[in-house]
Image 1 (cartoon, rainbow, N blue to C red):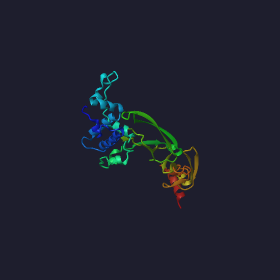
Image 2: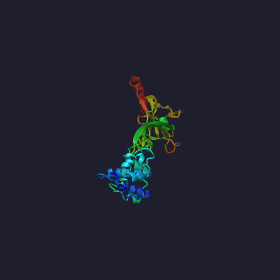
Image 3: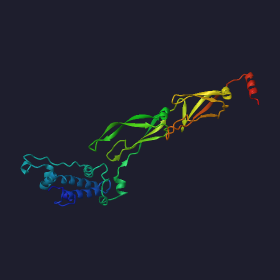
Length: 317
């Protein structure tokens, strides 16, 4: 035998069957896994039992180790010792205990499917498996989604290409790949609406991908501003019409031309409300807010004496 005693590493005797070897590895791997055991030397022990299991769980390697020991296992067997006329290639441990652990338990979270009797043997620290064994998710990645008022009035579909890091099939290396995310914009969405794509961030071996969150930002509009479900329109009017009456023409977002009479005296705080001509409600697109017309009154810069007299006469009660 060489220096390594794989049976001793797994705390089993040499007559152990495959089920005994698996049970021993399960118990010791949970006990010494670095997620749950931070003691000095725990990782070295975790690596040692992984190598022992890698050998003893493979019938060919186990038979070679039982007959020729570690030296024969790792150095290869000469032809005269039963190597079928050739010198067999020696065994080399890959030195990746996490791979052995993942292959044994399966899944990205090896702790997820363990039975209670397995967990009871783990050295639980700071919350045990729930605190340390579980992968942590990266913080959300937030990006602005700039939309025109027409997009939010009618609804639309936006396709956004992202580049993210994804894990390759070997579970250890990664590469950059593009992906198209589709956002179905609903009529009536407001500034600040958040659209979340779960776990679409960069992948990593020891973390859960971040959520990607798009936040609606309204682009400025040539005619309207928005206040919740209401649309605000500013009409420029001369003082004469503000006092005597006029009509306002407003082109709506869906291309209609409204002709709205204003018969009241328009003062600086006056506004005209046109019901049902605002933005659709995100909860019920058939319901709409109001169109609110505000007024910017243009006063004359100069008045002749005669005009002043006539205005004063006209306004005298």
